[in-house]
Amino acid sequence: MTAQELEIAIREHEMQRLELKESFNVECIEAACAFANASGGYIVLGVDNNGNPAKAQLRFEALRDYENRIATATEPSVSVDAEKVAFRDATVVVLKVPENPLKPVAYKGRSFMRKGSVNHQMTPVEIAECHLKSTGASMDAVIMSGVTRADLDMDEVRKYMAKAIAEGRRNFSQNDDPWLVLNKLQLVKSEAEITRAACLLFAKEPQIMFSQAIIHAGAFRDEGALILDSCDVGGNIQNQVDKTIEFIKRNIRRSIVVSGKAEHDRVWEYPIEALRETITNAICHRDYCSPHDIQIKILEDRLVVISPGLLPFDMGLEMLENPEHGSRPRNKLVAQVFYDMHLIEHYGSGTRRIKDECLKNGNKLPRWSQQYGSFITVYDSRLKKDEPLNEPINGRPDTIKSADGTINGTMNRHDEVVNGSNEVVNEVVSGHREVENEVAKTVLEAIKTKPGIKKPELQKITGKSHATIERAVDLLKKLSEIEYRGSDKTGGYYAVK
Image 1 (cartoon, one colour):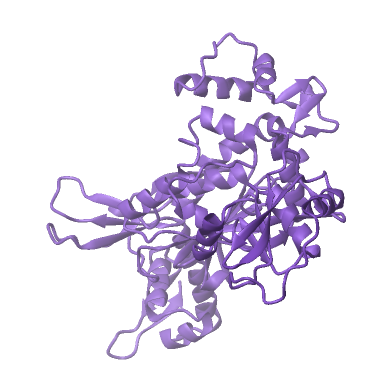
Image 2: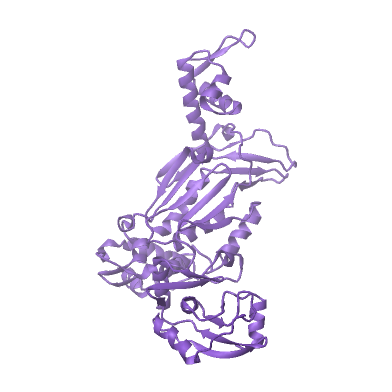
């Protein structure tokens, strides 16, 4: 590194690859470890944190001594190059640290990774991922103990082959032996050497081996205090995407935008294709060493996807905003099968596609964060928090198929539609009807217990709004559970039939 290059690096604050130290100490060895585990960097001795020559004169050792102290303290050994550089009327030492081919590098049993300007001590999971990456392997390539060929479902493999052929991403023949295909894809090594990826993708009962390989989805009101609907989506992971989308669709709202066209535009509360991409990423890239499952929470004003595992150890949240960022799949074998089946489009293009779908649907861009060992995606609803329920369209319920069977769910919308007004008219899917039924049950019990009870009292008992009570009462009338007695003039009331 020349003086001019050093000057530019300090001025542009390139601290991802630059460590400034007034003298050589233990932190220099930790920094060497961190750079070696990343993409390399420079340690500059004789410069303070502000980028100025240190006030105390640097006590020079022989350059070879600096190199030897780092090499002997690190495992595997890190070979640095030391040189003296004239810098602002002073002489400093620059230690050039290359990326180590074998990782992770450790100092006294601890490994470090450069993140921004900080030397972060790596977690056990990061250490494992780092080692696998340096050897060209991934977490899902590990062989499962006690699993054999008999545990795999060859029909599922054939479905994968047919899909990959149809998508034009593999040139398999329909007559190819599924077992040989698995072997060619390195998903199996022998009849008793089955990878994690093969179990997750093609096992007859994958949850026996990976109980955490499920998606727990729920729809809630009152910030999670009231559960409307829930389901656990299991089975082979490539089949979990569609089942999860089905659950989401039956628990979110849809809008009809009236613009005078022959067919009205129907717009979901959340961008379905963006959600599909997010869920696919969660399944494909999650940490299957974690005991936790993927969670999806549908709240009144937002939808949250929580995926176990952080971003790859050498990737930060800011990289998601960069359209040029490359893909770094945690589970390479799973990612390849997902690509073959067209569950993922192109490596590294998912974030851009999510943004495009949000803009097209009229949603804000999702918010990403990392907390408590999980990667979290939050979508804000494009609709108002409280929307009224109305009667079924033409009195005819639509049929919605869930993960565990077929459920008749009623879609609802406002009766009045004004052509050309561009109003948004809400359609609410069956999950919300379940809440109304729960409220109706409470109202019915209250009327049984106290005939003649008034609506304000019902509001207090249920904690619901006047409009919600009205809808519950209307539903009970239609079901012939209650009737209106007396008259409005003399003070009528509702009673059980």
